[in-house]
Image 1 (cartoon, one colour):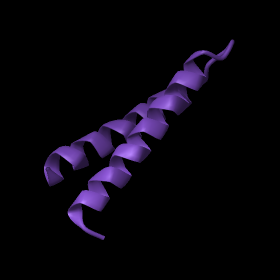
Image 2 (spheres, helix red, strand yellow):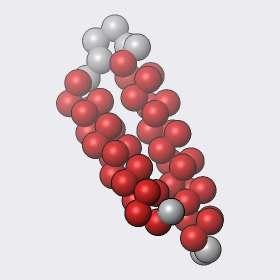
Image 3 (cartoon, one colour):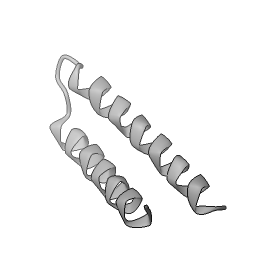
Image 4 (cartoon, one colour):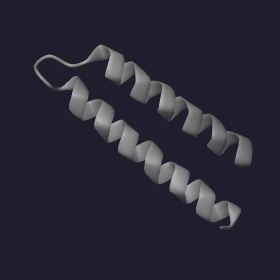
Length: 53
């Protein structure tokens, strides 16, 4: 896997997490613990993308 492939895979996962966060936030009773964990995962991915780039 090249670095470009790795970055693209991370960006795809980042976008998926963003959708999951949005979906959870728009539920009648969102699970804030789950949202916080998703945001934490998203931040780790963003940091890894920045480190690689």
